[in-house]
Length: 156
Length: 156
DNA sequence: ACTATATAGTACTAAAATAGTCCTATATAC
DNA sequence: GTATATAGGACTATTTTAGTACTATATAGT
Ligand code: FES
Ligand code: FES
Image (cartoon, rainbow over all chains, first blue to last red; front, top):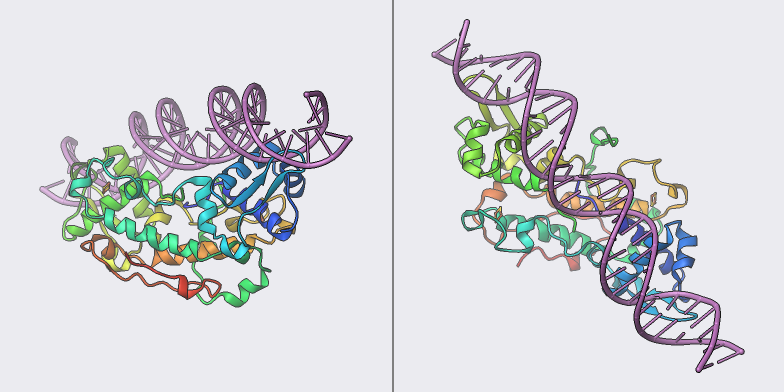
């Protein structure tokens, strides 16, 4: 389905909350209360985001987390990468030498191309865009309707 | 990691082979020999692709599979969708009513926006592009206005 | 220095999604 | 009629993801 993991989805919820209150330091338990995501899970996500410099942390009493950069300077690709690792559509396009038919393969290069196109699309959306009012979305749409509602699968 | 499944990768290998020999009907076992992917797996993939009209099938003796459309008319989004189901980045952006915080959620709309940008990028690549010699090729895709065009760079 | 508070790191378990296999039914060519 | 090939579905195994727990370390305030 080409989707981001639940943890990444949670991460976006957490970051959205933090971005809305940029002045304060946010503890893991504050964020649990604010988002409804379980504490150990919130904690795990915060650690991952800090490790990849999306957040900065302050230890000890009165500690917590804050954004490392302005919302406009953090993009969605960074967030996804922090939680899920490098974005790549196929095994082959990240690590070479693992595929049996690599030597005689001509599609690898083109998967790489697709991969790049996807990355570019994701990279272009910032955290600031994520927290922008949804109405802005309606104004922004300039592409044709793509996913037809009739195609939507309702989880089996 | 935001990747396609192994089955989708196999599908691209199989379709690439078929696209290179468009005149013939290809049986599942022919394709096993040609690609190295195990027979039951090849069979599963062929059925999925046929169901979604990427391939057409002919039953019985001398039967097999062929492309339903010209390579230039089959895009990568169709292939991914056939194997993995509708492309959507988050649970919430496909099915509404499943998310606990949906009523108070403001990021859902923007995930949908990202989803659309990714879909547009993938849709712009055809099977013909996949079998084309690897070279620098322009994959142009339009993205919503929220994406700044100055950031777009689809090349190496 | 002591203590309460909060993150860092890592290891582990549980759950879900994916991959892969197998069996039976049906259609077609000769 | 028989050999060949796809259609469909059910099933198991594997892998990945999600979620939890525990120990170590850093900081503020007293
Ligand atoms: S290199 Fe792995 S499929 Fe081409
Ligand atoms: S509706 Fe589910 S996170 Fe927003």
